[in-house]
Amino acid sequence: MATGARDDVRLVDAHTHTQPSAAAARAFVEGLGMPVEREGTPADLVATMDRVGVAWSLIVSLVFAQDAVDAAVAGGADRDAATADVLRSWHELNAWAAGAAAASGGRLRAVVGVDPVLMSTAEIDREVRAHLAAGAGGIKVAPMFLRLRPDDERMEAVWRLAVELDVPVLSECGATAYGGTEVFGHPRYFAEVVRSYPALRLQLAHLGLGAEEDMAEVVRLSDTVVTDTAMRLGGRGRPLDTAGITETIRRIGVDRVVFGTNYPMIDQADHAAALRSLPLDDEELHQVGYANAARLWGGAG
Image (cartoon, rainbow, N blue to C red; front, top):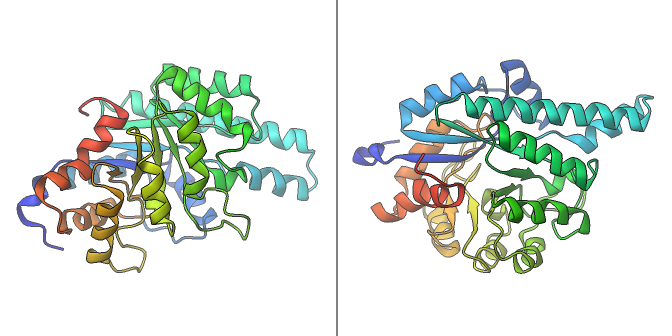
């Protein structure tokens, strides 16, 4: 995909699921029922970043906690013991991500994954503060995997803490159900959250994934809410709908969309080329590709 001089436009990838090892990446990707096509490690990601002009990428920690607990219990494990095991996995992944970010010389950033179903308010507070101090720069939630809507009262601990600490939250978001369950992460469920926490810095994933009109409404409720392009710029056998995705980005607002890929499920190089190929003008490309993420997550990167 030729992009010409726009290859020099610097980007930020504000949504990756980079893993500690190739084996961990394989387990993660296969757990989502997707083919394993990339190594999924920081070294592999940074090599691609260097090649395609990505200034920094965000490591998004995610554990399929509810599924893991349920599977363990179905296999005969005690629920409390299974929960403790899963929480250890959360802590270890968060610790690794924060450490990887701290050691990357600014090339990688990380968010702290939390689970308001399995973690108490005090546990969320400790987890977030500890890993922010170790190198992370925000918080991560995934309503569809939590089986919890963002406007559920159990999520209040996350929103309050993010505002108190003035750090962004990245949330998975979309109109599609996971595993046949309720659509917990629909953009419309974030409206009351944004109204209740006007200072909340929030990145909602995937351009709303089937609820783009609702996403356009939600991001306009606050100057500090954006959405990302992860998995929406073609790839995995889907052709790039150049006109359609450009229209969607402009409808949501070029000032409210940030570039993201979902690496390693998506090839970062392909998504970068796809973004640069869109009929956005130079300023629009700079906003979506770099400036909006830098504004939300802080620093020039």
